[in-house]
Length: 128
Image (cartoon, rainbow, N blue to C red; front, side, top):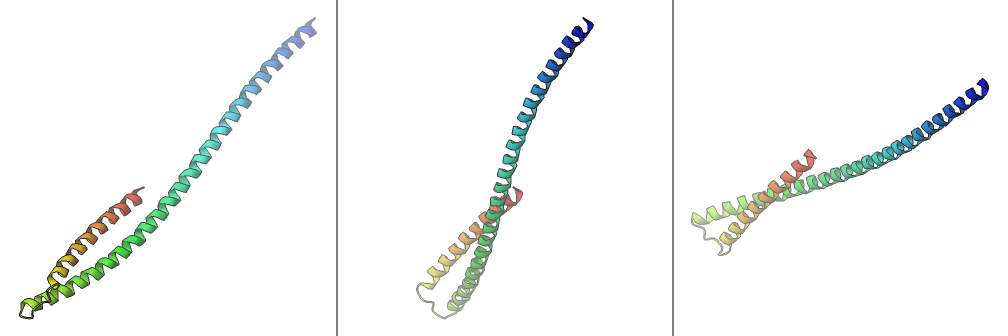
């Protein structure tokens, strides 16, 4: 009789342990799924970071190109301003030179504004 009681208690203990093991297994599976989801999120964030880095490289290249264009336009503007100054001193300017000079000044202002915008984008990308 004592042996039967012990066996019944042990059977209940085994059932309780089996239930606990099942619960823990479910918890482990849930944690594994959560970990996999987090791994995917990290992968996606790394991909986004790589894309942002590439965008930054492209923006920097475009900025350098714009700076070069701006330098060229600035040099052209200086040349045209020198020609215009010489014209005012007595050399008659061609009729379209003043208009071209104003057009170039407007282009330089546009390029400077574009340079500023690209610089801001560049800074924003760097902060990301």
